[in-house]
Length: 356
Image (cartoon, rainbow, N blue to C red):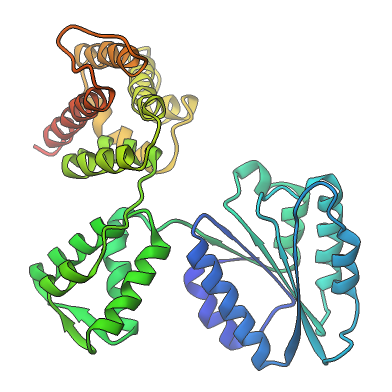
């Protein structure tokens, strides 16, 4: 069965199931969930633990099956942990995991914990993952969205008896904190723990957090396009500076920006040919957060604007590959910045028109 991440704590208080699967793209949240399951298991007598990591095509699955199906030699109950860092167990692994899942049903002496990275839709519909879902509890951990990060930070501070000021001052503090740790949840956790060591319980001022919290933000090039489409100009500038400092490839940043411009143009053309917007978005494989952003900006982006953006993306493609273009910076990052902010300004204007 599927269980929401926020429900795991209450679920564990009611008792343990023999099989748990944790997957997602936030290692901190997956690790914390695994620690919570281990703690609950120890409290219920699962005192012996064995761990296996699938390291390649020649992994010995028989040892995992033997551990999962055997009684503990030294304790009444045992825990078996299986990590699959790639999320791809292979043909033999698929068969073994299905067998492991069946073994777990009704087995009170062994608790099995499977840990996986973020899985795509095709993998989640595979036979081995379906077996884990059918026979046990599956919990997915998604990345904390940027807009949700200030609240996440506030909740973590509250756990250690600390808080920020009420009202706008506190929101400003949390936004500043989020800017410093965006895209790096493990480092955010460490910075929160540091605040507990530096300051007593109670209210933290903006100045205290400004002095104490390091800039440990890490930026994802594909999150950049979400910020651009959302019209978040200050965040776009900060992300571009961060990506450049991290040594990200200019061509990859250009690809992310130009792919959005091309998709916007294709969806707009489809709409003008009579396609409903939801259908046009599905045909261009625009899903999730981007789907909502496209819905906001597309109706107000004109053909001339999209054609100009497409031409600019073509020029910047040459610049990041070493060509010079009249009227454009010769530096690739400066050209990317201009392109990103051009699109960002159009998205801001489109959203402003939509609500006027």
